[in-house]
Structures are given as C-alpha cells and as structure tokens.
Length: 460
Image 1: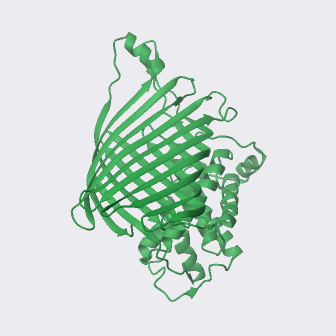
Image 2: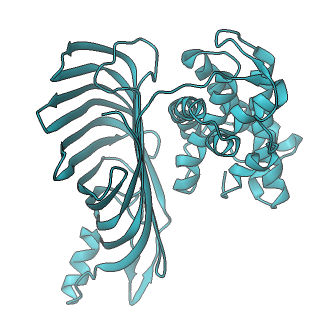
Image 3: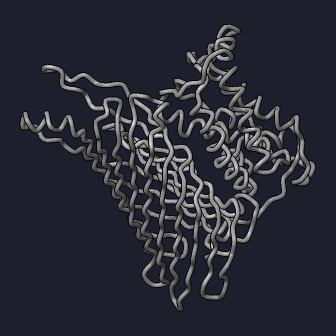
C-alpha cells in the first residue's frame, strides 16, 4: 500500500448497540470456518473500497493487475514505514481476531493471517506482491491480534470494546454471539503530559564534508505532547501454561509536535507462548518461558520494528514495604525492518536528497526492565532494549551490512493519591546502520516527559 488509508473505518460500521442486545453465548471451543473466512474477506473489502473511495493508486485494481500479480515474482517493497509497520500488523490483526472470535485457537488463527495476507497481496492492490508485507501481516498480526482479542474480552463498554477490536465487535453483531467476559488485567495505567526532545542525525561521510567546510551539525529541539499506557495481562510471575498469550505486556507512548512536524511512537510488547513457574513463594515469584514479541519504534529519524522469539524471565521479590521486579528477554529477531533516512548529498553547491530506503533482516535482541517500588517514595523503572539486525543480502543488494538500534529509559513516578501519580521519563534512542550508499549513519533522539499518570488497575 502506498498511502495511509482509514483502517479504523470499521469502527463506524459497528452498530452503537453492538453488545447491548441479547445474544447467544458461544463456547470458546466451537469453531465456525465460514464466518472466520468471511471476516477476513470483509476486512479486505472495506480497506480496498476505502482506498478506491479516496482515489489511492494501490486500490485501482483490475483483471490485468490481478493477472500481473499472479505471474510476478514477489519483491521487497519500499513503502512508507508506517504503512509496513504498524499498518500491515494491524491488518493482520483483523484476520486473526476474525478467526479467534469464531472459536479458532492462536495457532489455527495464524493460518487465517497468512491466507488474508496472500489474498490481499494478490487481489487487493495493484502493487507487486511484497514478501515483507506477508511477514509483518502474518507474525505482527498474530501478536497484535491476539492481544486485542483478549483485551476485548476484558471490556464491558460496547464503544470501547469496538475501538479495541473491530472484528470481534463485527462478528458479535453479524453472528449474534456473545463472548464470556474475563477479568485478567493485572496492571493498567495511562499517562499524558508535555515533553522536550533533542534530535541529532549524523552521516559520517557527510560530516567529513561539512567539517571540512567548517559547518558543524546542528541538533533540533522541540516540545511535544505525549500520551501513553502500560498494560499487563495476567500475573507475570506465576505463569505455568502452554496457552499462548495467557500473559502478555504492552508498553506504549505516542508523541507529536506540529511545528516543527514530528511524530514518535514506541510500542514494546511480549507474550508468553509457553511458560513455567519454578519458584513461587510469598516473597519470591519467578516465571520463565518462550515469548513472542512485536516491537515498533516509529520516529522521524528512528524507524525500527522487530518480530522476535525470545526466552524470558520474570522475577519478583517482596520486602516489608517494597518490592522489585526483574524482567529480561533474550533471543532471535526473525524479521526486522529499519527505515533509513538518507541525508542530502552535496553535489557542487547543491544539496540533493536521496530516496528513503528500507532495510530488512534478522538478528539478535535483548530487553531488560528493572522496577523498584516503595510505599513511601514511589516507583522507579530502568529499561534497555537493544537490537542487532543483519541485513539480508538478497533483499536489497545495495543495502548490505548491519543495523543497530537501542532504546534506554529511566522512569520515576511519585504517587499523589492511590490512583494518580506524577511521572517523569527520560529516554534515549540510538540508531546506527548502513544505507543505499553504504555509509554509516547515526540517529539520536533524547526525550524527557513530565506528566500525570492514572492507575486504573493494580493487583501487584
């Protein structure tokens, strides 16, 4: 897809009384194949018709474009990062939730993610079918879709529930099936506040030219508005399950500025695929197991995404008036994406910009969070997320090498009341990698946020 289209148009076709009517309870093990397939087809149809309505080129399909797609070799596309990530992950989540709402389990629903992506790539758009879209739609969609499906089951408000998972709400309206409500939220908070950010972009080859001309790189400074949330589903420290996403966590922050124009979006997730509970006492609780991750760091100069399988450890130790938590994840980023923002090249006296380039690869990742909370002094969290991405040589022959991304942060919250806290967050984003011209680049974003945090649920 070449343009951002209104994915959330589905929200406006869900009736206002989506779950206010008497409907039939559905057994979670009952599987309905045709409604699940129809849900995926309906999602593709809404997205495609929305694109045609707004005149986007990708939606101007014809018999000739379908024939071309069926006979073409799949490619690695160069679409805008926010389309590839999170756009295709969201689209895959629609297929996944359509299957989950009709009784299919996590693994069975991945088949619907693949099928929905294949039909979209071949029949839903004019662009040549894209391998990276298939990967992100399938695996990002599985992670994203499973989380929103389970969160949907937590919400009683029909409007809020439809906002979280459109296909679950659509399924309940069309097939008149009412899911059983759950109560598995372990921790839920939201944050809002102003921020200050400093951005530095450096091209080492270009810097040589600039320094030779006595021109130093100038950082950019701006104020941003920010919102964020943290969701912990299930007790992270007592998990012993083979059911995927019986426990998962979401950390999200979105910031923006209108002048100068700036957007950043940080989404860090992990969900247990299988877990063990080797230590469980009054003061010490520990779980460990295999986790699936979909992480997204979208910024004007730090775009990066990772789908990964990690081995995770989550440990909590309780003192008399305090506790600390340690969460670590180490493993394999089986598919990562990094968008390179090339600098203008000095040709004579003119600066000529280069085309944006996407890198796709595989590699290693490490995520670490340490939290200390006391009754009197509040809560402090230290976090670090590092990714080393090996660029697959045959996907972009001119964009070989390694990409490195690191996010580190320190956050402190001081409680005014049981539910309201003052929070300060300092985060550093660092990205280094290779471009189409094989020059090393470094992008840095240094951000401070001061805001208010509302805690809606805390079972810790």
